[in-house]
Length: 483
Image (cartoon, rainbow, N blue to C red; front, side, top):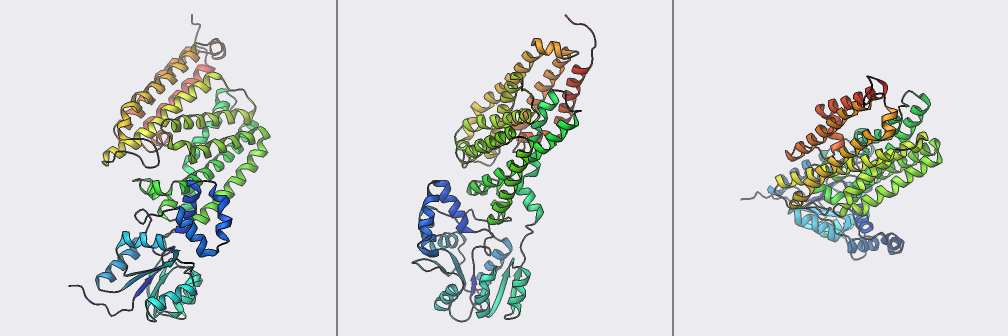
């Protein structure tokens, strides 16, 4: 038997309170993702007023209550109060369709008050609706300064991730029933959203410097350091935009759901400001290197945006684009220091990174297979595709080794290296390293990103260091005359 609560009805806000995200901004992202031309329609929708704008956005987007992030501690409290028989009401400025989806998913609310029929339920309008539908006695759970008029009219307040000055203003007027502090959303979360660990990929810019054996040239090294920072900041900006683009599919992923945007730990507006700042700084740094390098960076941004917004949804085209984006980093490094890039290096890079991109896809499919799922969300891949992807990835890896073997036999290599025959040891190392990555993938031990995995894995690091050491030895050492 459910106990009957004597407490006043608990009225709960949605955006920023029950969920740490902003459903309107997420809806806008969905609308733009569905059709970029909707950006041109939005100014006309805004002319209808806030309620009209939200209604137009809701008509073109569908926020699922199932995949939104929720504040677990607040949800637990609401469920406990519901069990005691307390009336729970959802009151939000979000559109009625979104509120109903959330209420239907959670099954907690006795009433739903939301924006509809030209009435934007925010601030005083929300307070009026609460008084009409709930009565003068209620407790309000909110998060922002805009909720102060509602708290002042309530019997008590539930504070959820409220700023210190706002909390102090509320405490002066009403008692506090409960307080739920927010998760830390500081520098650490921003750095995670920027994916600073992914900057390791941009070490590929140094490859032309190494293959030209110019790593002792301090001028070129300093230029490459600036180029590296520019590319890294630009890549981070695209990662953040990509994460916003993929919010719904990330939330359905076992690991990606923990990303700052998907989990709601980083507000969307704050993330966009950080991304814009990173991109602006990247462009300034690239321009300081050279105009040609700036053009390479802009080309990277165009191609990576095309990948993020369109091409990654197409089977195989996405991995081909990834291999090109990796190769573009090497080309950009050549442009930064003004050296020509060997056709051998470019061919090797395309096959090598095609194999690594296929490792990434196969690793995701192996994880899905282990979780009993049949297909990826947001990408055109199925678990059954592994039958094709396994040999394709292995073939790309062996093609990279073959290209490297032809490079060893090329006349320019024979004339440039002191002991070019030593490079065959590097070829053996490549076979072992690539095969090891594929074995780890088949065992389900591969990280989402094989490049990051290879840099973190002890065996991979040792193999790569050994190959680099052998290449240096082959260049500088003259061990004898060979036929």
